[in-house]
Length: 54
Image (tube, rainbow, N blue to C red; front, side, top):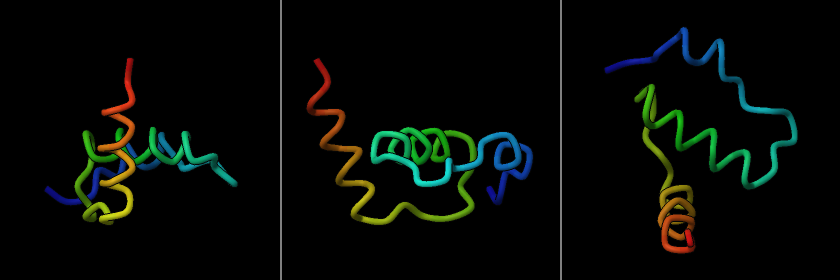
């Protein structure tokens, strides 16, 4: 699956995004578009966030 242009147009990364906003954006991006692979660093952040959920 390539780029989901419609999703990208409707879901731009906020300027000066906080770490939480970046994590949310990348999580949603992974669900809706596979135009690029996640970096190892972002994957680790996602795994850590899941472990820290109440």
